[in-house]
Image (cartoon, rainbow over all chains, first blue to last red; front, side, top):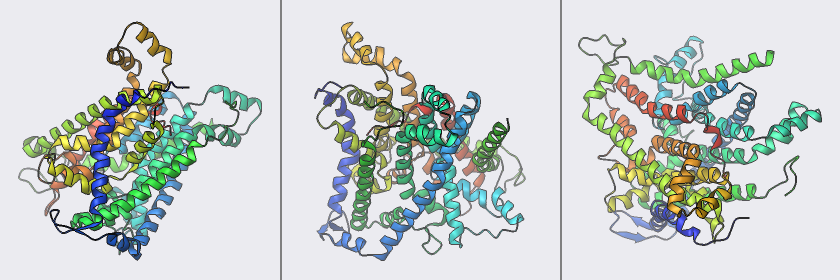
Length: 292
Length: 263
């Protein structure tokens, strides 16, 4: 049990001051804007909940919301199993192989986000791109500009390329923290590889994996720059995700409506964070771990 | 030994998946993509890298990026270390609520904050400067710094602190003389994650540098135009990758240890 001492607040204070300045203050400001019509920032006009009403009654909002959910669902169902699988294979590999694979797979994480679509558009370009020419050579008519399915494929593959490394690093962190005694006990019980995974590795990875789910969910749910650059929400709005709608309104300086939209999105974030906290803080007993 | 062969093949596929799109970028960066006197278009050339060295704007952008990212990492470590220590060693009023706040700020999409940040920073003169970007990136990097450092500090036994205090160390001297050396790998991992998340962020960086103080990412954006020099764009991209790849290499053995979160 940690000692109870409220002087610890002094240690937290500097971090809190900065977070207040760059996080809480902007949120207060944006809440204020969201109830006003700000043709220019100097002449606010109170409109109450009009902007909110416009958002929650528009078809477009729900269409974008369901597209964002679908994108997150696809991305998670690919990246999570794939990442765990790679981490499991890494665990049985030589040290040198592990660090090589980890270094390689995390390289896309350091690519600036606005360059990721540029790299991929170059890669799938039918005239000069390696993948583009390959597909043309195979006789596959790949058209990411006007075929909605193809735009989706590009976005999902690109996102997987970008973020798989994070899932692998987190999953590997979870696996490598399991003491050997667990595996010895499993061997004595003649547990199958699936049982080892299901009753030892998966429960032990739970914390880091929930972190991976949370980060991947939020980042894919609010995907912005990458999706915008590939096809600007097209074709015909088929990849218009939530954040693209918001970006559009900010670009056209509609302060009031974009503020209201920011608040709506922030409430979604709060809900997700709350659900995550509720789901992870109830500590279910882990297999083979003595109750404390 | 059949399974190990399959494993190597799978790793090779993963490696190819990561590297092939990048390879094309790297190759393009060494090709002259616009017609120029004395160089055949589409042939190997160092012209793009030479053009970066000749351009004052691009060199300034590299400098801006380095300034803001170093400042951001220093800030996050500076305020994150005491906060992480407080979370690791004490319980206090509101500690769980504060942890929840950190979680919320880490996952808040930058596009949600971009409008008020733009207005706020314009009013106090923090727009168009690397200092503004360094500050604003704290919103998602301070939580990361605190989480990772808290994990590393918690794994140091409490007796370690008590011995130092008995030896007459004050809190600041204990921090610098004992704690920092003891969790050096943790500081490295924290710096790495703060660095990459700040280095790649573009939404806030764009809205804060509309007319000046542009980092590399925004300088690359500005290169797109009527006749884009793709070779130059790719050369800048490759340059933007170098520090990140170097950092990955340095922390490769500790990568997996960081980033364990408590709620």
